[in-house]
Image (cartoon, rainbow, N blue to C red):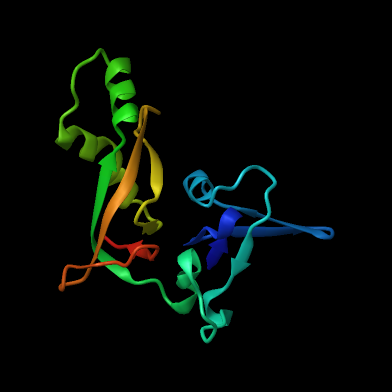
Length: 161
């Protein structure tokens, strides 16, 4: 599905739609809602990829509608946000966290989950460790397959580990 939020922000995503009487509601992750700039009770447009009109001209984030299937990526770069990292280090006694510790606590559990992540260059992700500590990351690079070709700006992808 392609989800279109406020200000024509779009991303691939998984949604759970439920119908009650005359009203339909959908549930999506807080990271996806944040990146689409959605708030509680905002409306979101859900476009199934198979029914998307691939012939019309698109611009900006709506370029996602041109693809019937999101591409699979080989490499993704998650960069922790400085303020979030400093806050986490301060809450844990002020000691600096090593890159391996950040990778083991936050990134690996996110990428190794049963559901495949859908990421887009520029997305901000709030990841939690098993203790409930939070750290924000920004996706700074998304690379495809063997060619190590970078995904175009605004393109969203399936992260496959």
